[in-house]
Image (cartoon, rainbow, N blue to C red; front, top):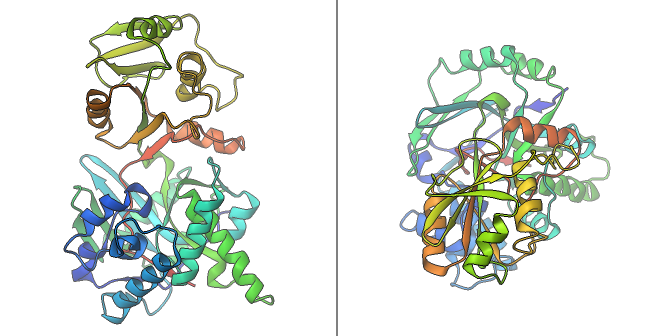
Amino acid sequence: MAVIRPFRALRPVPDRAKEVASVPYDVVTTEEARVLAEGNTLSFLHVIRPEIDLPVGTDMYADKVYEKAGENFKRLKENGILMEEDEPRLYVYRLGEGKHEQTGLAACCSVEEYETGRIRKHEHTRRDKEDDRLKHMLTLSAHAGPVLMTFRGREEIDKLMEDEVKGPALYDFAAPDGVRHTLWRVRHNAEIIRAFREVPLLYIADGHHRAAGAARVKQAMLKKNPHAGGDEEFCFFLAVLFPSDQMRILPYNRYVSDRGGRGEADFLAAVGEHFEVTAGSDPEPREKGRFCMYFRGGWYTLRLKGEFDTGSGDPVSVLDLSIFARKLFEPVLGITDQKKDTRIDFIGGADSVQKIERRVDREGGVGFTFFPVSVDELLAVADAGMIMPPKSTWFSPKLRSGLLIHQF
């Protein structure tokens, strides 16, 4: 049973929503955030990346950064840019990018379900990043960015959601990146809450550190409120839930700064021990089990020789990224830990191919592109209680931060 509940959203006044709404905090660097927010004092980046309002070089984890986040958040509220709903509500949130469209539910989810594993995850979290989210949330007394979640879809929920979008939208705008964001206030909360009780499990798609931070917020607040009953706002966190069959995953590609100490000919020969190498290929694989490599100004297709390598047969070992690690990263490049090896960079998004080409042409090294992980593969890994390879999924399109805020 999936527990969801309405909340009294803090949200932008309608005519300022497009100015306030920003990309999530974790998809841009400080410098990229500074550029995006330039000339727009209402951008929510001033709240979720507040170091952009401090001198260049400021430690993004310094106390004054969180203090600035609180100041900027308070300013948006006091200036009437953000308004609070008069009663708890659910919201339908539709994302549109080109021909792709997905319709989800914005609601609060139970921290207890996260703690007990009914909200499943597929990534490890880092303590320092959890600390950052914990401090940010406690400074604002709010969850400022939603966790992107998914579930195995149900026809009943689809029908209820379609009925909700027949009315006028609260917001409907295209962001600078071309993604369309449309939100409706749900009229029939009780029916949707009942329908979600039939959903056995929820899955975190993107936002593991936000969810982990919310769990630690609950722990911190319970220490201050030892007689809390479990129904307090800090026992819930903000999420947007989409049916799994509507989710879209783009590949998370790789750039490696060197060839493991091998010359060009030796490198190609080493790759050829496990792969059939074909020059002049497209830059992206068209099917599972194929890989593409950018090297010396050209693209190559890599096809694994022999029988398909299933590893130990578990949901992680059969992923393309896992196979590639065993057959190329480890034996050819000596990369045994992709998280810690400083030679490897992860490049996601729709323009990742162009970024790889520019990087290799400018700095040397080699780039690799992959067929995207499927949502079913991700759910299988989560159901097995296992962890995806690092930087496996780039969900697109992205939610915007600042449209809905949950205060506790």
